[in-house]
Length: 389
Image (tube, rainbow, N blue to C red; front, side, top):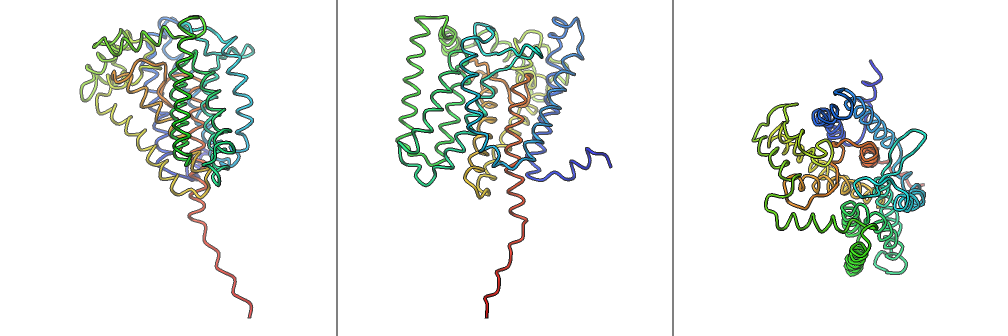
């Protein structure tokens, strides 16, 4: 028996979630290979295998990270929460000031030794959710109090989202929504949550005004143009037009694997608009199947929340599932012209090194909780000791 077969046989935890993670990996390799055809000819002289091997390497690394996180007791992540936050905030500040400027946005840090680009917001999403889960769980006995419970939770959410927003508003909004939903699950007082939403709206208003006055500081002009395009242009801009053409061509059953035409016209068909390419090649059924996988992932995660005995495990599972599923829904909504264009990738599917690895870590954390929940359920309850005569 091979090592791989032994690993599969010994896997514990929610088998449905494991199956979904593996299906995501397989679908990602197929979709990225198909959608990078033009990129390979433009950047690599027609070497279509280059991006397949590169993405396959990251997929393998992502699965390894998922497995390693699954092996760890989920309580370990609570101990890492503050360390992750201490690393995240300086990285976000560094990115804001010294980050690599791509498309008028400073989102990337270049690691010179290995020539790897790193998006600090990917780490920030993971770090903030783990930190929130830890703090909410720790303060459950007095969660309704403002100064002792809500204030220590409020500050990191506001700081992290404000640092991300100037260059990547869509990620900041998605992370803010995830945080608010996690607070609702964590029984935070509704008045406090409404106050946080008010602070968020006020902070965005100030950021927008600053960006309009000093365009080099934020992407306020881009925000305005995308909202105007969404609201007043019924066909959408160039990206949405090409996306809708891809979806229309797909029909019910699609054009078949590798037969996409719109991959040659869509900007970032392997990242932001990969869902449109999937529908073009696999049709409405393929798109619905992928959407269904995310829905099942969320439903199974909610099941874990109800079974987990510890507050941190429940909140960690809910936070990570929200992080994955909300971004997936946002990405899909862009492709079908339900919301303005964003720069959000499709989790566990789109090409992108750091994004893929951190989402793999999120899946591993969910599976870590599921493993311990399963062990708790099958562990026999010890019989009571007979009373002494």
